[in-house]
Length: 171
Image 1 (cartoon, rainbow, N blue to C red):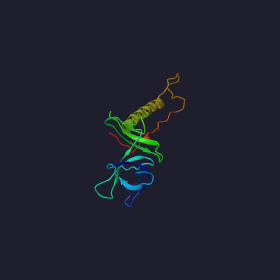
Image 2 (cartoon, rainbow, N blue to C red; image 1 turned 135 degrees about the vertical axis):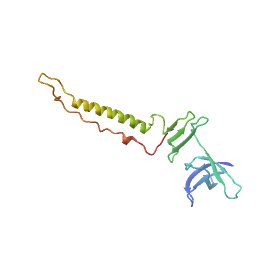
Image 3 (tube, rainbow, N blue to C red; image 1 turned 60 degrees about the horizontal axis):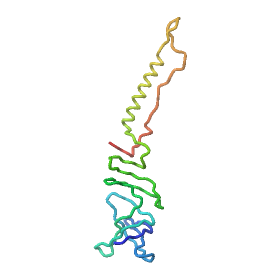
Image 4 (cartoon, helix red, strand yellow; image 1 turned 60 degrees about the vertical axis):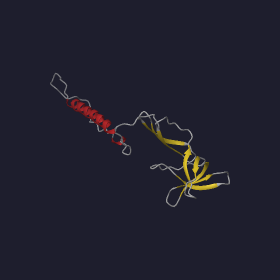
């Protein structure tokens, strides 16, 4: 096994990562595929440090992992992150050991849309009922009851449907 430095990444004929790297000095440029966990699709950036290993199949070495910098996880946690082509952090999905999942940070909360919509619709219904009562009330006057002479209120047509994110689901 060796520690190597990534030069670039391209795709081979069956669309796997073909990693070009420096192995034993600046004149030892080699290429091979990398091995990643099932279900993950990622490409390392230039200048990353990787672990290179020979296999029992002569001529079939592989990059088996990367030495990441700036890791944040605690025991029992997992995190998926991305960077730009220069290795500058861009975003992450962080599964924390307290049962929370942070998507892109923790400054704001996500919501359960159906529950929010239910509460919003109840509030809208209550407001529209109050508007109907207001519009139908009468004022007693010396000459008999009369309708108010101020403007008539209109029912709310508010909606939160535009806030629903169909691409993210939860329990």
